[in-house]
Image 1: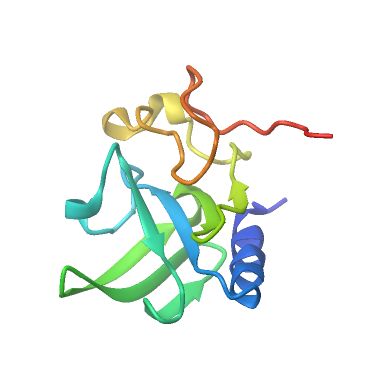
Image 2 (image 1 turned 135 degrees about the vertical axis):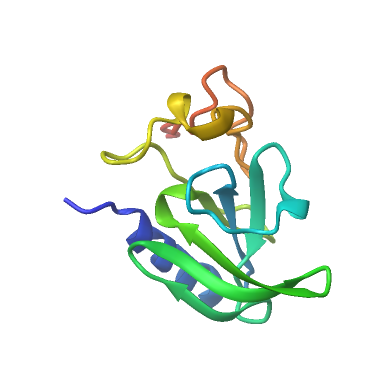
Length: 140
């Protein structure tokens, strides 16, 4: 089966926008193929505002998300393979989803250039729990 991540990213982005909130994605900037402004990367991650007012030409395809935007006044084309998207959430209230490993994703412990560090996601309450992988918790 194909990865569910691109479908969930599209659906949650639409849901966040329908609720008049601002969708942000957390990206593992160290993964192969990621093209983001390196000046804004912290702990190997970058948080990107993907609202229509912040970007131009947003494309949320099965392989990657891409758009044009200005960072510090400098225009840039951003390209993020879907397996590098760690989370999507609403800026205003933090509601969204943190993604875990899926079949076919690269192993985060053997990623390029030590990308296994700094995997905690911005805007979530996951914190740092040893392995750094996102974890889900059932709340009743």
